[in-house]
Image 1 (cartoon, rainbow, N blue to C red):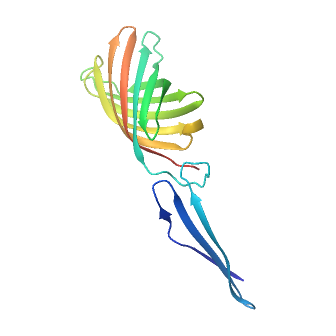
Image 2: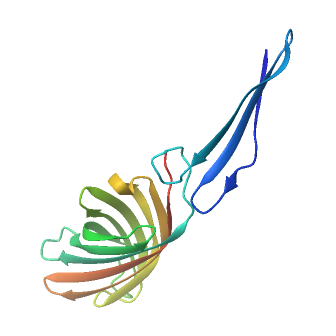
Image 3: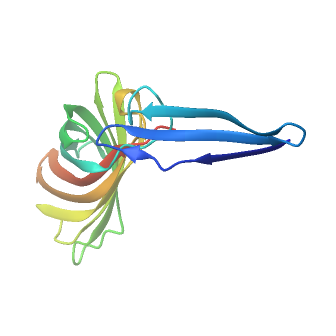
Length: 188
């Protein structure tokens, strides 16, 4: 018995992906047979979980962190809001590592990892930026990406451009970030 199958082109609208599948086989003694035609409507990002990613949408996070520089642990605590593919607001924590600091011209490569949460859901991010105007005040720009997520944000993917600024008012160092880019849900 030879088994063959084909898939017709999918039809899409804004929220539904519809696929048609046909399977057939040939039995040398009995001849060709049509086995089945299946139509499936899949709702991206829904409970169907067929591994179909939603279409990329704009995403923006505004993050405010406060570091207690007297602790020298480079851990910031703060708040966040977002709009676009994810709309939320709550608390956050960040670990920042300022590497390659040059006292003469103030250039720093800044690497930050953080977690944003609301209720029991979490988005973990990573950001890389270059600060080229000193420490207080400072501005920096670079890239960000989502590296992990849980709960309602599970399977969220995103990346984009980060801009940040900060100012020291000892013992607190206040940092604001704006993450702009696109994101989508991509079930595994």
